Length: 252
Image (cartoon, rainbow, N blue to C red; front, side, top):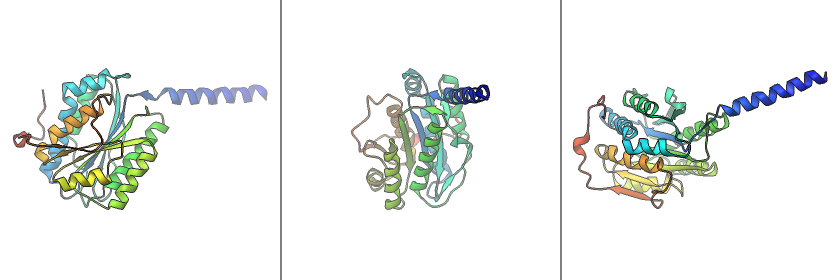
């Protein structure tokens, strides 16, 4: 009987160790929370996805990802409108070499829009928090640096958005924002969406999105040394209207 009990205990310990050992140490756990509500046209959705894809192909961002303590990040994507959409991108991808980063960029570049509807930022935020905490608890990723990156061009219930923000903060998750459009949208994100330790970078239009997201990801993957004072950085005078590149274009 003692031998059997001992065997059970050893098996339990080994099983726990094995599960723990599957966790991948990463420098940041990052969730991209992307607005696909009705106010976002098909071409604007494409600009968002192209912007994210080309940001991950950027040499500076790739150097940040591969040059950190662990040389890796874990990233997933949550799409939201009036509710969130469950997709294959819910699962965290480990980006730990050039091939995996470029493959993730290609996936973003070709990902079919999952739906549309009204705007409920809090549903996207809460979904991202749940998936992020599960990824840590289930040993998918191992890090205490958890960041949610919300992009969108609208507002929703300020009370519910604040509750979602506060829930993230209570779980030691930072929320940064990429508001698209007017100063009103940027102020809304600053006051209701991002956490006190987060920041927002405003894109004046979807045409400006590519530069804004590149700047934002460069900060989020750069080890925190160049994080601005919490608040909003407006990207003005970018002259990027001509950057509405074709949906399937690959950056070299």
